[in-house]
Amino acid sequence: MKEHLYDKQLNIKTGAVQMTPTKSFHYHRYEPTPYQALETFFGQYKLKSSDRVVDFGCGKGRLLFFTHHLFHSTVIGVEMNEGLFQEAIANRERYLQKAKLRTEKIQFHCCFAEEYQINPLDNCFYFFNPFTIQIFIKIVNNVLLSAEKSLREIDLVLYYPSENYIYYLENHTPFELQEEIVLPGLFEHNPNERFLIYRLRKINS
Image 1 (cartoon, rainbow, N blue to C red):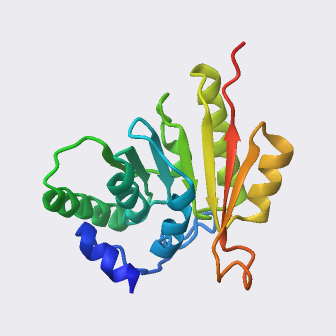
Image 2 (image 1 turned 90 degrees about the vertical axis):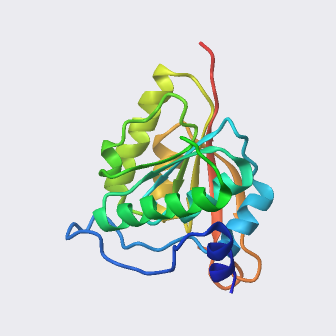
């Protein structure tokens, strides 16, 4: 029920349509994060209006509109599928129209995730298992290179986290597990129903 009610409230259409975006096995099908999960997550994880959130494999933009609605943060969606990208753009028009807003704080890029040019101010990156570990490694390396050039604290947020993602972060990167947020009533039956926040702390040389 919340899926429909939140979409209606935000004036967007992000239903749980699943599709295979490409013939490449590296990229997974589209599936939006459930609103119930987002409610639980943002009940504990707070953002500021100055934060910049990047969602890789953003689909129709659900996470981004919900985040902007709650915190007015800058939100950036990266989506390689042209059809989903166009639906995200249409959702942005509807969302801004209902909210009576004109803002540059909601952006979408149609490109492969590993080709996204990380902004020096991007500081939170969201992953709902959008691609294989090979692509994930490329993106984390891009994030680390950006952090070397522009020192800042950076969070990686994993929903329904892949064991491969976890192993790589904990054994091959300076990111450290900051927090685990489990979904009550779901985690007990499926240990994947959780969010993991990995943090790279700003280290001044």
